[in-house]
Length: 212
Image (tube, rainbow, N blue to C red; front, side, top):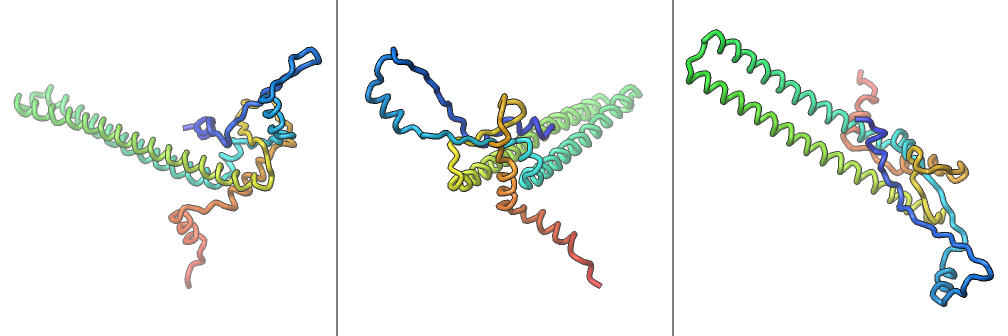
């Protein structure tokens, strides 16, 4: 699965729509509600953006859990492929012996029923593992979104941005690099990130010097 495409639709922060209107001296006088809305609007719109692709490749959370999901997906594929090969081999052996009249009618029917059940069981296993993987992926996406939104909420208490946009590919036609806060956000995310216990313990074991 292509990691970049997989996370392409990630939303870093909610987008807001800014309506810009123009008027001249001949325009009708605005009513009190319109004037009140203008007075309550922010004087300055402060905007920043974050490169989603960079988060996907540089945020330790993404790298760790992408590796976990890739291994899980590969294990599922290997399991299903192994069972599929075994079933195909059993079916081929059955056909060969059937042509050699090695079975009675009752034996052949029993073996054929067994192969059909194995095929149905394999389909059910495929469905179950696929559902489990989809659920795991959804949990990861939710955790990723929550971690980014939680960090940005704290980050923006001082920065006071009106909007923080997500830039993925060419979804923003133009963005001045002066408004790019990607590096700051990634640094903050990585500082706050705590590795999964199992992975962290494994790394400590690998890095620990051998006892003499």
